[in-house]
Image: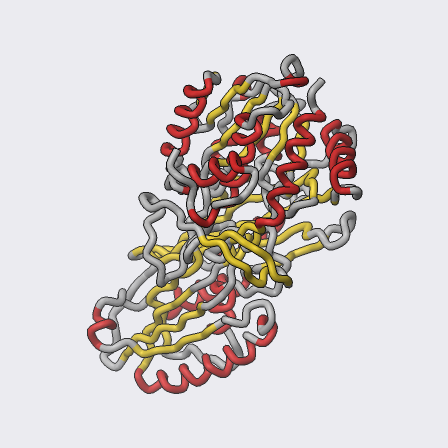
Amino acid sequence: MPQVAKALEGLEPAELWRQFDAIRRIPRPSLHEAGVREYLRALASAQGWECETDEGGNLVLHAPGKGRGRDSSPLAIQGHMDMVCEKRPDVAHDFFHDPISLHREQAEVAGRSREILRAEGTTLGADNGIGCATALAIALSPGLDHPPLDLLFTADEEEGMSGAFSLEPGMLRARRLLNFDAEQEGSVYLSCAGGRELHANWRLDRGPRCSDDEVVRLSVGGLRGGHSGVDIQEPRANAIAFLVELMVAPEVVLEGVRLASCDGGGRPNAIAREAETLLWCARSRVEALGQAFEKAGARLRLPFAEGDPGLEVRFEVLDAEQAAAVPDPVSAMTSRAILEALRAQRHGVLSWSTVIPGLVETSNNIGSITTDGECLTLVQMARSSKPRAVEIFQERCELTLEASGAVVEFRHAFPGWEARTDNELVEVAKQVYRELFGRPPRLEAIHAGLECGVLGSRVPGLEMISFGPDIFNAHTPSESLGLASVEPFWRFAVGVVAALCD
């Protein structure tokens, strides 16, 4: 294995960081995890472990038990191989070929100064590289007691959990599972929300340009973005939703204005950081339109002054050469219909849990909007821990969207994970955490989607808990790992695994 990256020098436990360093060097966008699988197979072969794969791209390494756990009932430890691939516009990075860079620094994160690990303008991939590295380190570190381990590495968690959905149940010998994909040290998660994507597609009826028309660009940028489950309740702007609010603001009159294109966001599970629309506008209306957008922007950004202080609205007129490359305008009727349909879509928290204070029950994230020739596509993801809440909400969205001429389909539905009170792992985790740190862990539900819900549907009778170190701003180029949280996470993980030796 090559020498560990400079940013990781001196960090403990050494084996965990060696494995994290090896994983971050391997490009691993969703559905392109072949390099990680090759690495894991080679590692298993070197250790003499049995290795199994399935058609979904999942991989299980069977590591024999050690010490007191040699003859124990098996235990599964699970993480996902892929990572969210987001970067700042000014960063040149090819996620299919380039390794993730690492930078270690002291920074103000989540309200206090912390030593963090981050990448240079891209997502870090601690989600879930740190979980995968920890699973490997437990099996590889000498002197640790652990049961026979099923180290499960799933594919495509970030795009649609297709790996977990297609898991071959027979590959797991264990009926107890630790998921290392949580992002807050000291919390043990017992349930998560389910969700589903909604895709709406409009055919664009383009018409001729008028001789006195000009093209203007309205853009929204500088936003923090975030995870559409973990961060949805924070006062962070969604660039697509904000762009739509600008266009339908009472200060703005769109007479003589027609749509050319609209693009923004990137992933259904990430809060959109940037968005822009190109509009054909009568030359006589351009100046007034720019002033109206400026006035509306000043008003609409006020609620986000603290949560998204970098929010920026830009209005510019394209020159003749730039305008020549812009698609012809969409008809005024279709432009209005699409805009009204977009206006009706809701972003953010839809309802709060009446059982767990402070927990989002149902939410919706407007994830992306793209123009491709004669087609405009909107993708949004709703989540909920309440049965049928996602379906009921999206059925209302469907009616509005179809009335505007869109074709709607639903994709990538994933089940929630319902908390169980008879879970042996919960009692073990509570006892181990109290013994280690003198206080109980926080038992929580999470509004994000974890693979536990899918895995539980694939492997009946599987008991699960989820925990991990502190990861901040996941799914954004500001993603960082709180280094001080890794050591207690490691001690807790090792302690739980040892306590599960029969």
